[in-house]
Amino acid sequence: MAELLLALDVKGAEEAIRVSRACEGELDAIKIGYPLILSTGMGIVKELAKSNIPIIADFKVADIPNTNALICEEVFAAGCSGIITHVFCGSDSLQAIVDGAHDHGGRAFAVCEMSHPGALDFLSGANAERMAKMAKEAGADGIIAPATRPERTEILRSIIGNSMKIYSPGVGAQGAQPEDIKKYVDGIIVGRAIYESADPGKAAHEFRLRAL
Ligand code: NUP
Image (cartoon, rainbow, N blue to C red; front, side, top):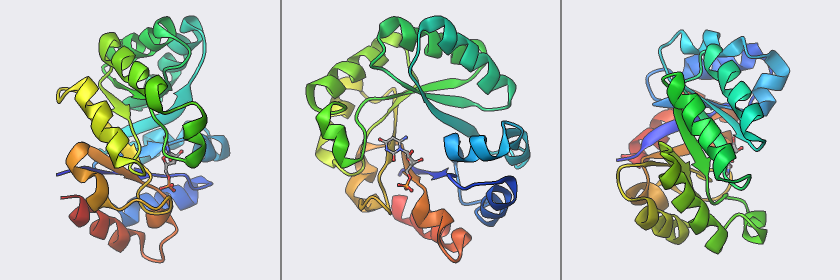
């Protein structure tokens, strides 16, 4: 059984609140990223979190340790409960995010293999497997691995074991189906297939059932 995370990549507070309200009761977390935050500011986090749903900041952080620690301070002060980071900046940068999240009672998730075709240029294969090992060693709470390549996510699962979570994007608009991936992961991440739907609540409900 996989959780359902909504990738709320809409623009503007009004649209974000409309979609999140429509999906209330169907979601295990909301993932926010640059499209929403750059169009509304971080204040939207407290608004969304009013319905007691965890908010995960998908900022794919990729910087030096000090900057990463400063980013964590802002993300968790704003009311997020999780943060998504890149791993390729190295173990010290990754550790700053993991420690920054844990110091604030939050969770840290590491991008190991991305879901889009261009991931095959760098963010896949041996690099992804190495990053999964690094994420485990750093004490990350989970990794991000692709629903579009279930056979790769299965390999990454074998590296990190069952005590860490895998959240998996690529379901819906990027072509993967919940049934392809649910047995390998703890949660599926769905964006456009829900928020662009004429009835986001119904779409979320259907994805939730298909992820069970
Ligand atoms: O590898 C990744 N692929 C991916 O799509 C890592 C991600 N974090 N994402 C994010 O998941 C992407 O930025 C978007 O927020 C969401 C997928 O959205 P959609 O393709 O379902 O609309």
